[in-house]
Length: 178
Image (cartoon, rainbow, N blue to C red; front, top):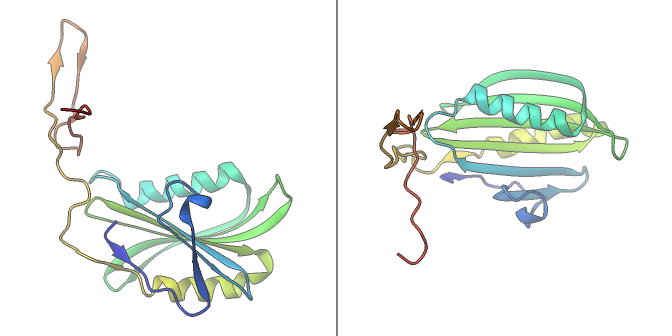
């Protein structure tokens, strides 16, 4: 997904599919306990950083009760991130957690870099997540994650529909065995 990070000492890799089928990286750190999950996507050119932030925040709110939340935009090494910090109660297990969402988009790629820890680890979560984010880089800044696609717009007034998909990254589905 056209990015790299370098895990600082004491972070260990875990199997991403054990946490989220969309995750491409999952790491854990102990003393204090902090988790990191990265979802990298080829989102096409139409997904803005603001839209990615709304998607990420709404996902958190659907799974927990948000007790506190703050947002800021940060530019690190020329890359703009939406940084969202949250304190939430996971009501199914009645536990309070801290989250840090670091979100970025670039040329059709989207990255959600999520960190979480127990509520008591607020300062450690902030400093450890920043150490990881400081190593984030786009591998090829010229690569296009969305592409223009191959579909042409279609208008069929006799059938009552028209499509407007040209240039939005959609491509014809190739049937298996062709």
